[in-house]
Amino acid sequence: MTDAPPPVDLRTDEPHPARVYDFYLGGKDHFGADREFGQQVLNICPQLRPLAQANRRFLARSVGLLTREHGVRQFLDLGTGLPTSPNLHEVAQSVAPESRVVYVDNDPIVLAHARALLTSRPEGATDYIDSDVVDIDRILEQATRTLDFDRPVAVSALALFHFLPDPKPAELLARLRDRLAPGSFLTISHVLPALREVAAAYQGTMGLGTLRDRDEITALFGDFEIIEPGLVEPYRWRPELEPAEQGPADEIADLGVCAVARKPGE
Image 1 (cartoon, rainbow, N blue to C red):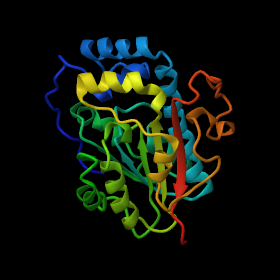
Image 2: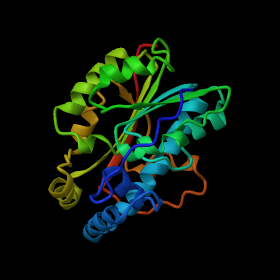
Image 3: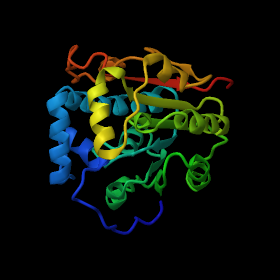
């Protein structure tokens, strides 16, 4: 485990994607500008809050399944966002304490809270890389401090690629897939075109927001094989793995989807 990053200066007078997402999740690491913008977005689409919460629960279920049923012990989390318990390493290490996890983000607010992502069990390891996700070659180089890319690695990119314009996601994923060993996994969640007004709000305020349909999202996986139950809404992805999951019925249907895929050849 590396030393925790030092505190950084943060701008609090304009909204920031990581802090706004924390607002959706009901967290506490956001400021007035984030709450104001987040509430404007929720006024457009109140279902965005349960969608964000369902996406977070999907993370926990997918990591638990990969650890328990597929024996994955290495994880690379792109676009980590603010720490929200349980964090990825907490889920993985609750099943396999020796699991090793690398988090990646370039948001100053996430860097300031990265200590919460570096609380590995002694049997395993965690690391944090401060980097733009499009600089995938640099990320892979630094991740080798913690991960062995000759063995399977599970890569997650949740609620990330709709912030990147084409062709950036396809380009970085192509380089990433080439580096991953057979038996590795790729997990993606992404919003759908039904959130057009939300995307326009993000574009107008932050210059962010790219919508893709189901076929375009499926194409991001390349030759990876999507495992059951396929590309579905987050609350429909293996809900039996979370007995307490109530599910928001159909209120967030067709707003966002997710999937987990495996690199063949092992």
